[in-house]
Image 1 (cartoon, one colour):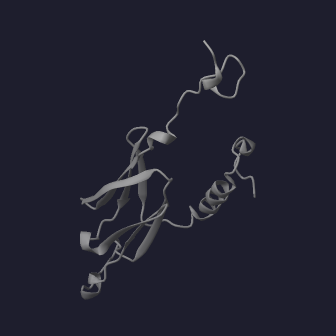
Image 2 (image 1 turned 180 degrees about the vertical axis):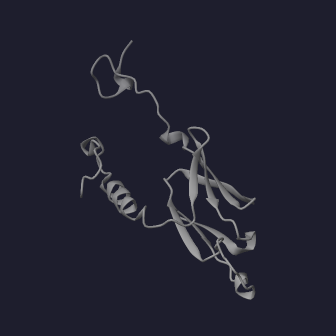
Image 3 (image 1 turned 90 degrees about the vertical axis):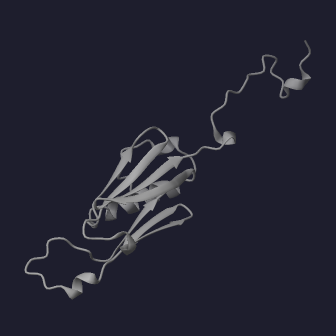
Length: 148
């Protein structure tokens, strides 16, 4: 692993695959410039991805959810029927992927004024939420063995 990130990797046990994924994505992040997108945090558990897709129609776009992966694709061949003197708005084919954490759920999507907005929420199951662990004052392994 190329420790390109100044981050305390030793504090995160069993996350080697995460660091590899981050390094892989960071190496290709600057290679792709289309479509432009924003990732917006609305709260600690609510996010949205906004893709700028002027020149596309809703029927030109596809959103697919796979385990841990959100794939947005699109393409429009209708421009072949027109003659352009200048073409500054593209509708070329694209595929854009977003890795999703285990508990991220896609709540919906909308396409308004050339922006594709995908709403995401983090839903943490009850058994994975933080909880307080009581410390047994008598040093026993089982609190049922305590006598009062």
